[in-house]
Image 1 (cartoon, helix red, strand yellow):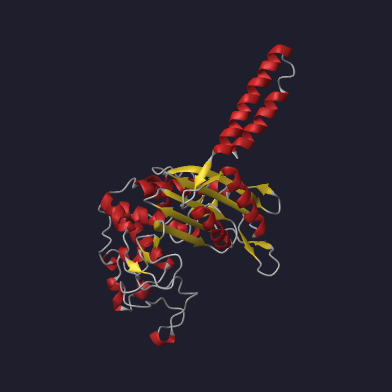
Image 2 (cartoon, helix red, strand yellow):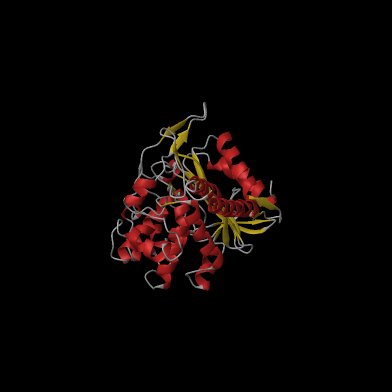
Length: 389
């Protein structure tokens, strides 16, 4: 991407040397040609190391992603690869808006969807270190959850349980009504099991924790985004990562789409601003800035070793999942042939994404797309990431 930009820039400069005397113009052209050649060589030499050690060139990655964009009719993709704890490749493909054919670029902003959760988990661990919250104190002591006060088991729920999806809360109760055997009123919030005894992914659990930490910080759900920006995003080099709505997001957010399974057409979704803090899925960012968060996890930056140990340590077994054997604090964990894999995916319907991190190898990738087919891209991408093809 940068090589192409530089190439265009050099062509403009070449067109501007016509008025220079012949000798000076020849020297100028030679200098610009050599500079351009070095840029192209540098770009062509860039590569990503697959988990099996095979090198994959930036050119081959470009070609591969473009092919997937066409195959799956993805409106656009923002993607970054990490090697040896550094971002070695990043690019954007496709259109930020299909109707006006505006290209996705480095400034394009996507919904990180549920990949917001690990960032919020990091923030909670930072607040734990500050003494703001104890992740093993029953949360009703900080702030009750009125909708489940009828169930005495609500007094068992802790932040640790919410971060590891063991609270017993459903994902979203309006879409996941209680089983009739639980004898819960229609549409009511409920607990699926005794807190701390099993796994059930819950976005509502994270939102409960948002309310608790906002209460403890004496702030509201709009101002909390500024706190997370100050405590997490900016220190970790996430230049454009926001839990709130602002002018930059409004200007650069790409349009989300839901793809029709029948004809493959992409229908634009409704604009979601997330004006109030949503840890469950409200982070706006791009691949390169999210990659900086992944690198912070790899390097254990900004938190104590104890806090990172808790985040990366299995908290609960995850049944019947290809993505995880266990769940940590904000992260899916799986043993593979290449070591321990940490990851998270995200799905807001018209925005989806994935990230994968091998902490010990200091390798990983992240991508965000503005439609509902990240799963297909992930399945295609993993063989490239693991064995180079």
